[in-house]
Image 1: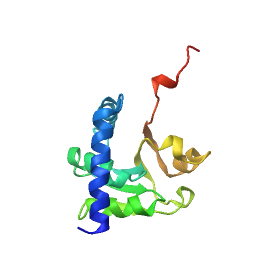
Image 2: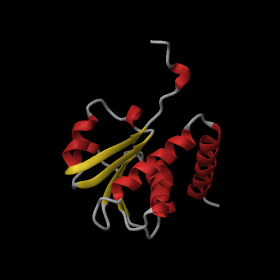
Image 3: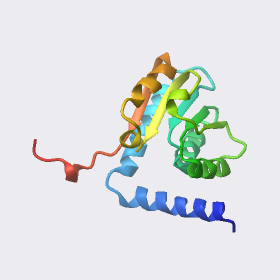
Image 4: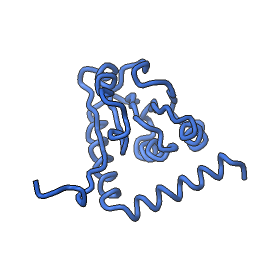
Length: 152
């Protein structure tokens, strides 16, 4: 087993533990996929989806299992995770952009991110807005850990 395969195996284990063991991750992903599905139902065939962050292909793979006709562009500057995602998603409707988000080209029907918002640079939403089609939406699923929230 080469290093990339070993890293992919570890990543799969990590996501499995995270989904099974972290508060609300499974519910968050289910809500995300329900929201994405509702939006995709209103779009023409083969919509173009921008995914912010590759997660080693974990989220893209889940999207493609549910909606095999979507076209996905994954934007992630982490080349290691992009390499793992490429390995996982061979011969699929996925392209990768590992440049800065500000340099991304295209116009997307839907933008999706999972646990990326709090990692992206301040002001990244301007770049996202620039590549969204006029009627597109950004579906964001990020961490809100109740244990960090005070009474206020």
